[in-house]
Image 1 (tube, helix red, strand yellow):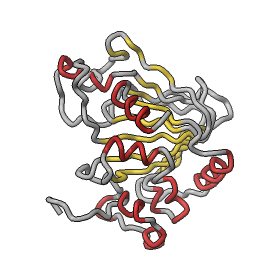
Image 2 (cartoon, rainbow, N blue to C red; image 1 turned 120 degrees about the horizontal axis):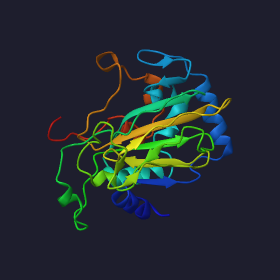
Image 3 (cartoon, rainbow, N blue to C red; image 1 turned 180 degrees about the horizontal axis):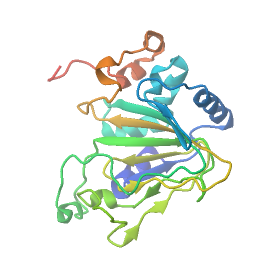
Length: 249
Protein backbone atom coordinates (compact mmCIF):
# COMPACT_ATOMS: atom_id res chain seq x y z
CA UNK A 1 0.00 0.00 0.00
CA UNK A 2 1.14 3.55 -0.72
CA UNK A 3 1.20 6.37 1.82
CA UNK A 4 -1.99 7.67 0.18
CA UNK A 5 -3.67 4.29 0.69
CA UNK A 6 -2.66 4.16 4.35
CA UNK A 7 -3.90 7.73 4.82
CA UNK A 8 -7.24 6.77 3.33
CA UNK A 9 -7.45 3.86 5.77
CA UNK A 10 -6.85 6.25 8.68
CA UNK A 11 -9.78 8.33 7.45
CA UNK A 12 -12.06 5.37 6.68
CA UNK A 13 -11.23 2.84 9.41
CA UNK A 14 -9.26 4.90 11.91
CA UNK A 15 -6.18 2.67 11.66
CA UNK A 16 -3.83 1.02 9.19
CA UNK A 17 -1.16 -1.68 9.31
CA UNK A 18 2.26 -1.09 7.74
CA UNK A 19 3.99 -4.46 7.22
CA UNK A 20 7.69 -5.13 7.51
CA UNK A 21 8.86 -1.73 8.74
CA UNK A 22 11.74 -3.44 10.57
CA UNK A 23 13.61 -6.48 9.28
CA UNK A 24 14.97 -9.29 11.48
CA UNK A 25 18.32 -7.59 12.29
CA UNK A 26 16.47 -4.35 13.08
CA UNK A 27 14.09 -6.19 15.38
CA UNK A 28 17.00 -7.85 17.20
CA UNK A 29 18.74 -4.49 17.64
CA UNK A 30 15.68 -2.80 19.10
CA UNK A 31 14.97 -5.71 21.44
CA UNK A 32 18.55 -5.44 22.70
CA UNK A 33 18.13 -1.70 23.28
CA UNK A 34 14.90 -2.30 25.18
CA UNK A 35 16.53 -4.97 27.35
CA UNK A 36 19.22 -2.46 28.34
CA UNK A 37 16.76 0.15 29.60
CA UNK A 38 16.76 1.08 33.27
CA UNK A 39 13.88 3.03 34.87
CA UNK A 40 14.25 6.76 35.52
CA UNK A 41 11.74 9.45 36.54
CA UNK A 42 8.25 8.01 35.91
CA UNK A 43 9.36 4.73 34.35
CA UNK A 44 8.60 1.49 36.13
CA UNK A 45 9.35 -2.21 36.02
CA UNK A 46 6.97 -4.72 37.54
CA UNK A 47 5.93 -8.34 37.64
CA UNK A 48 3.81 -8.18 34.50
CA UNK A 49 5.04 -5.14 32.57
CA UNK A 50 7.91 -2.70 32.14
CA UNK A 51 7.28 0.84 30.93
CA UNK A 52 9.89 3.38 29.79
CA UNK A 53 9.00 6.91 28.67
CA UNK A 54 10.78 9.34 26.32
CA UNK A 55 13.24 6.69 25.20
CA UNK A 56 14.38 8.91 22.30
CA UNK A 57 16.33 10.85 24.95
CA UNK A 58 18.36 7.85 26.18
CA UNK A 59 20.96 8.11 23.43
CA UNK A 60 21.51 8.67 19.69
CA UNK A 61 20.88 4.97 19.02
CA UNK A 62 17.16 5.61 19.60
CA UNK A 63 16.83 8.40 17.03
CA UNK A 64 16.07 6.21 13.97
CA UNK A 65 12.79 5.12 15.58
CA UNK A 66 11.43 8.67 15.47
CA UNK A 67 11.21 8.69 11.67
CA UNK A 68 11.04 5.11 10.45
CA UNK A 69 10.65 4.83 6.66
CA UNK A 70 7.01 4.68 5.67
CA UNK A 71 5.83 5.64 9.14
CA UNK A 72 7.11 9.22 9.13
CA UNK A 73 5.74 9.88 5.64
CA UNK A 74 2.32 8.73 6.83
CA UNK A 75 2.53 10.82 10.02
CA UNK A 76 3.40 13.91 7.98
CA UNK A 77 0.61 13.21 5.48
CA UNK A 78 -1.90 12.84 8.32
CA UNK A 79 -0.73 15.64 10.62
CA UNK A 80 1.19 18.07 8.43
CA UNK A 81 4.80 18.37 7.41
CA UNK A 82 5.51 20.33 10.60
CA UNK A 83 4.20 17.62 12.93
CA UNK A 84 6.29 16.52 15.88
CA UNK A 85 6.67 13.70 18.38
CA UNK A 86 4.72 14.10 21.61
CA UNK A 87 5.97 10.91 23.26
CA UNK A 88 7.83 7.65 22.71
CA UNK A 89 7.34 4.71 25.06
CA UNK A 90 8.91 1.26 25.24
CA UNK A 91 6.84 -1.57 26.76
CA UNK A 92 7.58 -5.12 27.76
CA UNK A 93 4.37 -6.98 28.63
CA UNK A 94 4.99 -10.28 30.41
CA UNK A 95 2.74 -13.31 31.04
CA UNK A 96 -0.20 -12.24 33.18
CA UNK A 97 -0.30 -8.70 31.78
CA UNK A 98 -3.83 -7.25 31.58
CA UNK A 99 -4.41 -4.55 28.95
CA UNK A 100 -6.54 -1.42 29.19
CA UNK A 101 -10.30 -1.49 28.67
CA UNK A 102 -11.94 0.03 25.59
CA UNK A 103 -11.00 3.71 25.34
CA UNK A 104 -9.78 6.44 23.03
CA UNK A 105 -6.61 8.44 23.57
CA UNK A 106 -7.70 12.01 22.82
CA UNK A 107 -10.91 13.66 21.63
CA UNK A 108 -10.61 17.32 20.69
CA UNK A 109 -14.36 17.84 21.02
CA UNK A 110 -17.55 15.82 20.94
CA UNK A 111 -19.34 16.01 17.60
CA UNK A 112 -22.75 14.71 16.51
CA UNK A 113 -22.53 11.25 14.99
CA UNK A 114 -24.83 12.42 12.21
CA UNK A 115 -22.12 14.81 11.03
CA UNK A 116 -19.39 12.18 11.27
CA UNK A 117 -21.54 9.69 9.34
CA UNK A 118 -21.56 12.01 6.34
CA UNK A 119 -19.11 10.43 3.86
CA UNK A 120 -18.24 13.89 2.50
CA UNK A 121 -16.96 15.02 5.91
CA UNK A 122 -13.34 14.15 6.71
CA UNK A 123 -12.52 14.60 10.40
CA UNK A 124 -9.02 16.14 10.64
CA UNK A 125 -6.47 14.19 12.67
CA UNK A 126 -4.68 15.81 15.60
CA UNK A 127 -2.72 12.90 17.11
CA UNK A 128 -1.70 9.51 15.77
CA UNK A 129 0.10 6.64 17.49
CA UNK A 130 2.41 4.11 15.86
CA UNK A 131 2.75 0.69 17.52
CA UNK A 132 5.93 -1.05 16.42
CA UNK A 133 5.67 -4.74 17.38
CA UNK A 134 8.84 -6.76 17.93
CA UNK A 135 7.04 -10.11 18.20
CA UNK A 136 4.62 -12.06 16.05
CA UNK A 137 1.30 -11.07 17.62
CA UNK A 138 -1.21 -13.89 17.95
CA UNK A 139 -4.45 -14.07 19.92
CA UNK A 140 -2.60 -14.99 23.14
CA UNK A 141 0.18 -12.37 23.04
CA UNK A 142 -1.86 -9.31 24.07
CA UNK A 143 -2.91 -8.06 20.60
CA UNK A 144 -4.21 -4.51 20.30
CA UNK A 145 -8.01 -4.50 19.86
CA UNK A 146 -9.64 -1.95 17.54
CA UNK A 147 -13.18 -1.11 16.43
CA UNK A 148 -13.00 -0.13 12.76
CA UNK A 149 -14.70 3.19 12.05
CA UNK A 150 -15.28 4.05 15.70
CA UNK A 151 -13.35 7.31 15.32
CA UNK A 152 -16.61 8.57 13.81
CA UNK A 153 -18.53 7.97 17.05
CA UNK A 154 -17.81 11.56 18.09
CA UNK A 155 -17.50 10.58 21.75
CA UNK A 156 -15.69 8.36 24.20
CA UNK A 157 -16.87 4.83 24.96
CA UNK A 158 -19.28 4.78 27.87
CA UNK A 159 -18.49 2.67 30.97
CA UNK A 160 -19.16 -0.97 30.18
CA UNK A 161 -19.55 -0.35 26.45
CA UNK A 162 -17.90 -3.09 24.36
CA UNK A 163 -19.03 -2.29 20.81
CA UNK A 164 -19.93 0.57 18.49
CA UNK A 165 -22.93 0.21 16.21
CA UNK A 166 -22.88 -3.52 16.88
CA UNK A 167 -19.21 -3.95 15.96
CA UNK A 168 -17.03 -5.34 18.73
CA UNK A 169 -13.29 -4.76 19.11
CA UNK A 170 -11.18 -6.97 16.85
CA UNK A 171 -7.58 -8.10 17.47
CA UNK A 172 -4.83 -6.84 15.20
CA UNK A 173 -2.75 -9.95 14.48
CA UNK A 174 0.53 -9.14 12.79
CA UNK A 175 4.19 -10.00 12.39
CA UNK A 176 7.28 -8.78 14.19
CA UNK A 177 8.44 -5.58 12.50
CA UNK A 178 4.92 -4.45 11.55
CA UNK A 179 3.53 -1.07 12.61
CA UNK A 180 -0.07 -0.34 13.54
CA UNK A 181 -0.88 3.35 13.09
CA UNK A 182 -4.14 4.66 14.54
CA UNK A 183 -5.71 8.03 15.18
CA UNK A 184 -6.44 9.23 18.71
CA UNK A 185 -10.25 9.11 18.32
CA UNK A 186 -10.29 5.38 17.54
CA UNK A 187 -11.88 3.15 20.15
CA UNK A 188 -9.29 0.54 21.06
CA UNK A 189 -8.20 -1.65 23.94
CA UNK A 190 -5.35 -3.74 25.22
CA UNK A 191 -5.66 -7.44 25.91
CA UNK A 192 -4.12 -10.07 28.13
CA UNK A 193 -0.86 -11.87 27.72
CA UNK A 194 -2.22 -15.41 28.01
CA UNK A 195 1.07 -17.10 27.22
CA UNK A 196 3.19 -18.88 29.80
CA UNK A 197 6.61 -17.84 28.60
CA UNK A 198 6.46 -14.98 26.08
CA UNK A 199 6.72 -11.24 26.58
CA UNK A 200 5.43 -8.70 24.06
CA UNK A 201 7.95 -6.04 23.08
CA UNK A 202 6.31 -2.86 21.81
CA UNK A 203 7.59 0.61 20.94
CA UNK A 204 5.00 3.39 20.79
CA UNK A 205 5.65 6.62 18.90
CA UNK A 206 3.04 9.36 19.37
CA UNK A 207 2.84 12.10 16.71
CA UNK A 208 0.91 15.35 17.01
CA UNK A 209 0.19 18.42 14.92
CA UNK A 210 2.45 21.41 15.44
CA UNK A 211 0.10 22.99 17.98
CA UNK A 212 -0.35 19.81 20.07
CA UNK A 213 1.85 20.05 23.17
CA UNK A 214 4.79 17.69 23.51
CA UNK A 215 4.43 15.34 26.49
CA UNK A 216 8.00 14.81 27.71
CA UNK A 217 7.89 13.63 31.32
CA UNK A 218 8.79 14.63 33.94
CA UNK A 219 7.81 17.92 32.32
CA UNK A 220 9.49 20.86 34.09
CA UNK A 221 12.40 18.60 35.04
CA UNK A 222 12.84 17.27 31.49
CA UNK A 223 16.12 18.14 29.77
CA UNK A 224 17.24 17.10 26.30
CA UNK A 225 20.26 14.85 26.10
CA UNK A 226 22.99 16.91 24.40
CA UNK A 227 24.39 13.83 22.63
CA UNK A 228 20.97 13.12 21.15
CA UNK A 229 20.56 16.68 19.85
CA UNK A 230 24.04 16.65 18.35
CA UNK A 231 23.27 13.46 16.42
CA UNK A 232 19.84 14.53 15.08
CA UNK A 233 19.07 15.04 11.42
CA UNK A 234 17.14 18.19 10.52
CA UNK A 235 13.90 16.20 10.41
CA UNK A 236 14.57 14.58 13.79
CA UNK A 237 15.29 17.98 15.35
CA UNK A 238 11.94 19.21 14.07
CA UNK A 239 10.23 16.12 15.46
CA UNK A 240 11.76 16.92 18.85
CA UNK A 241 10.43 20.48 18.69
CA UNK A 242 12.96 22.58 16.76
CA UNK A 243 10.30 24.43 14.74
CA UNK A 244 10.40 27.62 12.77
CA UNK A 245 8.83 30.52 14.63
CA UNK A 246 5.03 30.62 14.43
CA UNK A 247 2.16 32.75 15.73
CA UNK A 248 2.37 31.59 19.35
CA UNK A 249 6.16 31.38 19.69
